[in-house]
Amino acid sequence: MKSRPFTICHMMMSVDGRIDCAMTELLGDNEAYYNSLSSLKCSSSLIGRATMMSCYTNGLRFVSSSQSCIGQAMNVARLSDGYTVVVDTHGTLNISSAECGGLPLIVVTSEDAPADYAAHLTQLGVNWMAVGKVAIDLPRMAEALSTKFGVERLAVLGGGSINGAMLAAGLVDEVSVIVGAGVDGRSSQRSLFDGLADDGWSLVRLRLQGVARVGAEAVWLRYDVCQ
Image 1: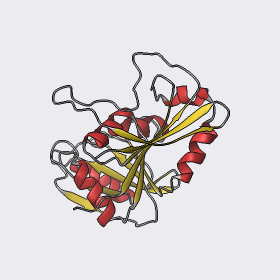
Image 2 (image 1 turned 90 degrees about the vertical axis):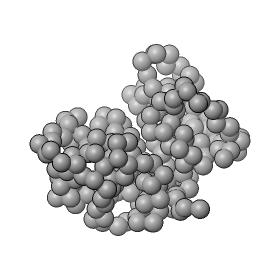
Image 3 (image 1 turned 135 degrees about the vertical axis):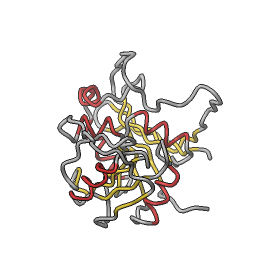
């Protein structure tokens, strides 16, 4: 069995399962979300491209002038006890720092991402890996996080597409959800797990681990994923 981190998807959502960051801020009980995240003892976290762009970059996109692709490659620039891992399949994030949230970055792309994007990251001193020809090979990513970067516990913090992709790949061990006291209701908004194909769909079964009231109005649900 290949090595990979123990992985917990930890999110805050409305009662109807929406996870828009601006909306969840309005739910209140955000301190309960961060306190519960801390209690999970995950020194590293993983977020998707959209979350990184909206929360941690200036919103600009990286513009490539390269005709060549990265290919299968990796750059280990800095080892640490914890990391912020960001999935950026096509190499479009305008990364300007080797850290995010006070932790070293690990940027994960496909092998088809532009070569000058990798060069840009290397110049900044950013850890990166290119795994998977067109789409990111998530199991290979998880194995590399464990064997190359020493990640033992990983918190997946959204958005819905990366949550869904990690779940579909069988890489989520636990689902941890803070349900805030509010309803979003907008059909345009992402849900907790999104993007799974309709063809060949199979229900992912969960086993209830615990329920607790946290903060003033929120509920913390924890489930083991039945593998």
